[in-house]
Length: 168
Ligand SMILES: [Zn+2]
Image 1 (cartoon, rainbow, N blue to C red):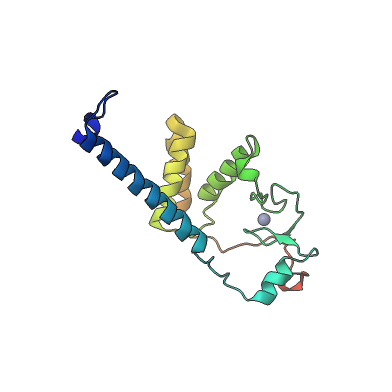
Image 2 (cartoon, helix red, strand yellow):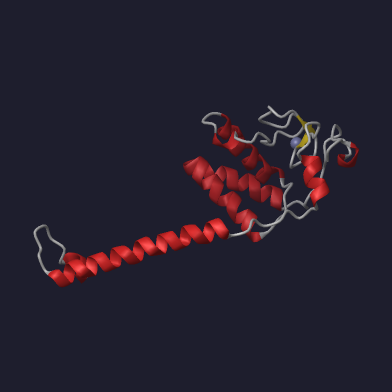
């Protein structure tokens, strides 16, 4: 920090200028090395083989809901069966992202999630961030549901068998 305090307009100390140039060259070299490292890095392989990747890239491939596995239209923002956000950019759109947050908060009060300390803490934190003064009401709803046993995982009755869909 003392080094940076000595930099003033009109400073003519040659050692200081050489030091600044050296640091600048090191920073540029580091950034260039980082860019080369990122460009050379191999992408991590998918957990499935090449045939499944080719099937997923076919035109007839059907998009599924990540929560209930119901077939989705490619233009859908929310799953009509369970309400989960399924659109590629739904969580980034200014208005629909509010419904995504609402869906996440409803999961907390429904109790249909993997109950770990981290997820429960996350629901408490999200409730605080979204409801502020009214967060204790949401926390009460979450705690009331936590007192009951975890419900069995439900899937939509409209959800088709994923293996029967083309391209899946
Ligand atoms: Zn769904």
